[in-house]
Image 1: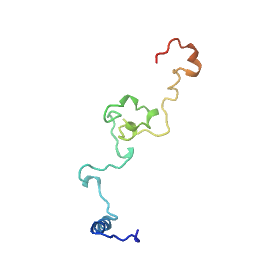
Image 2: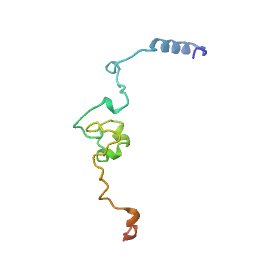
Image 3: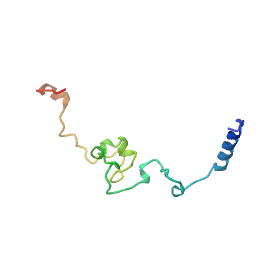
Image 4: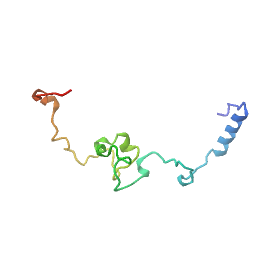
Length: 110
C-alpha cells in the first residue's frame, strides 16, 4: 500500500518497523516466550501420550470425533491419524436403531 502516507510520528515508526522486518524469517527456538507454534498436527508427534493434553476429553477423542477442538487443536493423538480411514468399520453394528425402537420404550425420564 504505497499510496498511504504516514501522517504522524507513530505512523512513521510503524512503517519503518514493517519495512525493517519485511521478509525476515525466524526459527521457533529464537522466539521469546510464549513460543508461537505453527498450527497443524504434522509438527507434533508424541506417541504414548494421552489423546488430550489436559485430560478433559480423553475418552471422547476416538477417530470419529477428530473434529472436536481438544482432539485436533492440541494435536495429542497417540499416533498420526489419517483423515479418511476407519479401522473399525462396524463400530456401530451393536448400536440400537432409535427410529425403529421408539415404540418399545417403557419409561422416559425428562
